[in-house]
Length: 238
Image 1 (tube, one colour):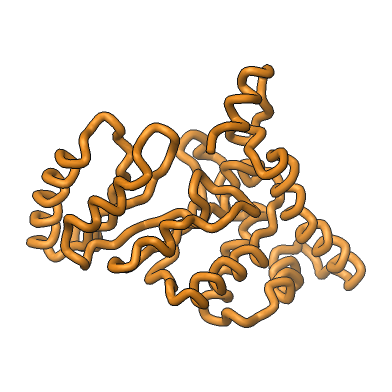
Image 2 (spheres, one colour):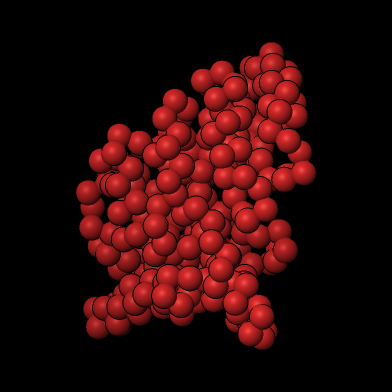
């Protein structure tokens, strides 16, 4: 497969010791580099495996291995704090992972405006001299193959991200009206443009507050808890 430039591997198996992981990764790295390809280790964190695994694996491998890190530490949480691994990993180039599809906030059936937040996250990394080498985004989910980012209201986030990468100082909200006009079946009047834009911008606050309680998760894949036990479990995921 000549168009494949590398392999991105998730470290998400808690039953394998760090030593065994490192031994296997060294052999994998050697084979990949012999083919002229790149190895990227993905920081797939959950509650079942040690949070230091990615850092230890990277320290045992050559410095040209990339680290693929989510914007927030656990899953994709609009409004949550930045992932500390974006700063803690200092000797490897980093790839930033973003979810534009909406796994945790409506499966792209509901709007979630993210451009202001994305700009703030990119600015934060740039100010701390931790600018990512690349940005990857989720645009669908294999469990729901008929729902994709394309032609959904959240496609605005992808369109806007492509502008923010090249024009980091642009006001994100300036990108909404042109995108709406481009997608509309007929030209939109200024009052309608403003009204729809306000709804889209407000959707970020809904997505930050509705599925969480005091900064803690209160849903699972956009579904509310079924009972008190599941509620308590969700509230203590971090």
